[in-house]
Amino acid sequence: MSWLFIAAGMSAVLNWYAVGVTNKRLEYIAKPLTLVLLLAAYAARLPLPPQWWEIVFGLGLLFSLGGDVFLMLPGNQFVMGLASFLLAQVAYVIVFNIEGVHLTTATILMAVAIGLIAFPVIGSIVNALKQAQRDRLIVPVIVYGLFLGLMFWSAAATLYRPEWTRLSAGLMAFGGAAFFLSDSVLAWDRFVKPINRARLLTMITYHSAQFALTFGQLLHLGYL
Image 1: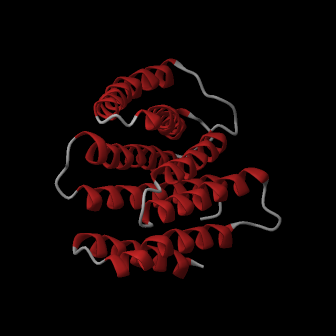
Image 2: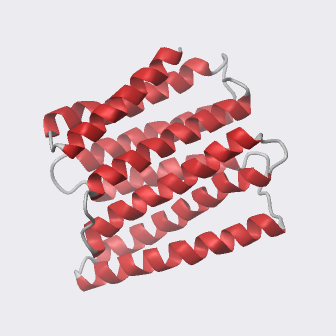
């Protein structure tokens, strides 16, 4: 079912175009369609019956689709979108650590490095929320930021897992980093300071992350 991956990629590019030219009608179609097609492409590669962790990864894609829809809808659906993406991060963290948490000197140093990047970003966003008197968002943003950082670390730590190939682990590490960048740009632009072409950058890095994580997972499972 490689045509599903191709269709998902075309839909992603169409969504980037829609965001770039501010075509909301096209964006409303292409944005959710991308994750629908990617989820279908992933599911089509799984054997029957799938293993539980394979289903959990699929749930990560499904929750991401929900988050896409909530953030796209008119009105203030940010909290619902954040909750959906939080569930996606939890699903990914579970799957990436299915062989157990991999603690070595290298992965611990990696966790420290990610923390040195993540905590200042989260702190700046929290300070901006306080100044804007949006205190009800502080706890959800902190919780989400911690799980986003944990997902980033879990994905990148596959580089040091002997059971992962260089290609599959490299895709995971790239996907985790791209997801972290995407959400950081979105939050910074929304709460701290506007970023030029932020929405386009957010979508490009977000879709790149989802595709990289999906391909990395399928390669690791031997389904590609």
